[in-house]
Image (tube, rainbow, N blue to C red; front, top):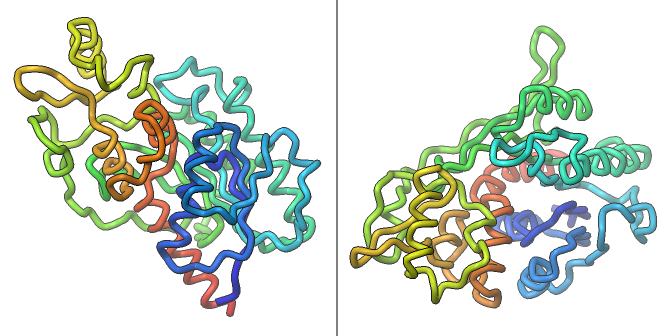
Length: 298
């Protein structure tokens, strides 16, 4: 299989790169656009050959041979689309960056019409936003919940032309099947204690909200965590008649990463990159289709 060239936009902790590695898909060059320093630190720790190109807004200045790009990954920000956000839509400050991804994709298509893409966004996005994204990409998404492969509910849309199905109306669909249910529950991944639900709420960046692991048993923290747990934002564990946040290891497990994967980061930094990142087993599932495409192409 010929090594591929990849651009990963909003790269985060580099889940796309790790998934390619796990599937033995050879990578010649991997360009990462990410502005969080500690996310880049983690990416370079595991894959020092990754080329950091910086802020996506400066993409026209990147030194890239666009004709060689085989795959573009994009997890454009969901803050303005998520039910937990302010719902400003694709015109919001963060989620409007989706249109920069479209600019890059269209630019690459001029040199390589066969380029493949993977675009992800939150499952609670308004229907109008899903329609606009689908029209921009000329394909309808598949909706996959990470609860099939991990112990968390993480509902997401994925748009990809890796495998396409066209229905009788002429609409193109992302033709990726649902992953097999691995039946992993929250009780299976916690290090100790008890939980009151089968699946965790979605791991989110606010797990590290202005606190440290040391003070999570304070009375104020107890009340805060309880309210957030009941509101559906943060999962807590009952241990020794106290409530606690999920540990760094437990957050790693929710996203399908090995224990200790984020050990070089602080708790808050790990919560940030895991909370706004991709679920590794889901991306592996999707990239299996890409691997088959590469094998057929060969």
